[in-house]
Length: 348
Image 1 (cartoon, rainbow, N blue to C red):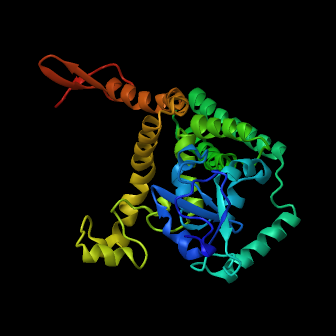
Image 2 (tube, rainbow, N blue to C red):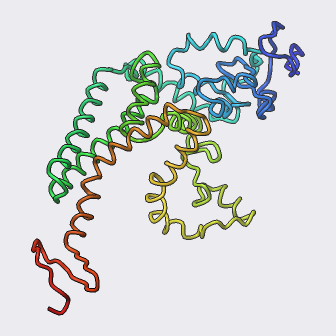
Image 3 (tube, rainbow, N blue to C red):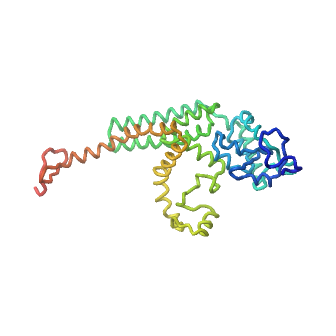
């Protein structure tokens, strides 16, 4: 029951009945999977049925069930006027006049400081992007990639060509990683469709990953940064324990997947080799198949011919060199030395 008894908890959003007045305590109760409310600019919305249709994914918006989502709503939606029409049917009331604008569970001073910082950044034009700069950035990344492939393909696998090609690819891949980040945040072009298209190309064709997978994880990361069980970037899958609470929980439940008292020693042996080659690729494939994202899957496999062409000289040279210097004849083991075509038997 809302304050003043104007609306019961069972009233559906958009039903046409008078909007109610609620307390933060009442809002906090609606945080289950089948009953989700949130607050934006003191307005209370019932998003229970909307989560499955949310363009950003149900997992992102559900993280704010029973909470204040004002800051996240502002940060994730560049065109606030456009999304207002989706909010209107979900409105069920507002906070009582005596209730604070910020969630009591949050630090009011920090929230106000960030609001001032954001207002100053907007005033200084720091959120205004220059699409031409990003297009030129993408162009020079493509040039580095093509130059690296051409260099290795034409000049072979000598030390000079290989090291120079590796340096070019390392530079282009690192910059492509950050470039896809900007397009993935829809922060370059005014139209989201263009951002999505270029993002799929950069992360799919240049990085060999899935745009849908990245968005699914990264948006959740920005929704609840460094919050255990909500931020996927700090989900260590049982290999490591983080923070002050998780080690205690693992200790009480006697969970011993790994010798956690030595995690600072085995971190560098497990995390770097497993993260990108194994964990990320398994996550990418599982996400694309489970979500039936065949477009991302096609982008994911387009990069394989490029990788093959790039690595083919590296794979071909050792095989050819090894077979060229090892001769086999029935009944006798012979070796070929250097570039000589004259074999000799062991012991000669």
